[in-house]
Length: 130
Length: 115
Length: 95
Image 1: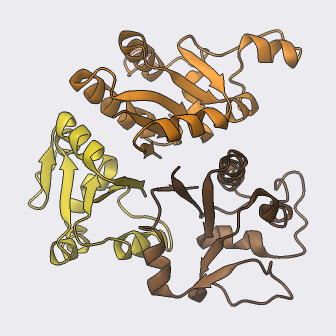
Image 2: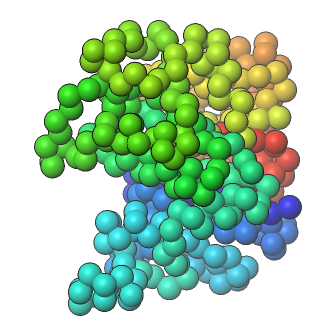
């Protein structure tokens, strides 16, 4: 039975994104399809900002999520409303708001909260990191 | 279908947490999921009538309360000792629980999300 | 079994007594992140009532090593065991 991860804590003000990463890594290593998707909400959507650059001697959390996602084909969803208001914007939202830039990093996708509801109803339970 | 409790604890005007928690509750209800709300700590202030937040403070979340019934969100729980009910100054749609029922609440849902 | 995930040394206002009161016999508590410090003095006394309630107490080995603490209470979990515990719980609350 698959599970869903919901991450709501900021990558800068909490350890939610770090803890969820360790959990997801261990879960997927034990069973590659044990997590159906990871949904980032509230300040956790800042994980998908392509422009953020951590100092070189610190963990690159965004990159670590991208590596894990590509290795296990794990969907990483960012709540579109939460992301857009925080400046994490994909190409189509950039056009819609008539902006010159987009900032969503590869491996992440913007989705509505309806996607979280779908995950909720198709997996055993949601494990939240806040 | 899973039943969900959304627990609001943050002040409506100190961060986006309260608003984003309410947004999640409304989306769950829109997708016909069973969802109840409960309020404690600074989030209780959302119940006060006659709120007039400035744009800097945030959106008036109190205004959303009257619309909850249209989303079939029927239960907004509080712990009775946390608030003295006063229909003249507070939204009247709340259900007060004694301390035992309040702490029992959190084990009666398949999912509890706190904001 | 509900797994209660605790990630802070102390929660604000009413949340601290609330999570403890909501524990039911057979539930489990998992301390993650800075909550590992609950297993050090002088915070340890707040965790001892869990034993009386027959609540299993867990912490992550990675946190104990990271913070350099050697807890005398609770059971250490590897990341793999953490996943097994979380997946086997009937529900999961992150306080």
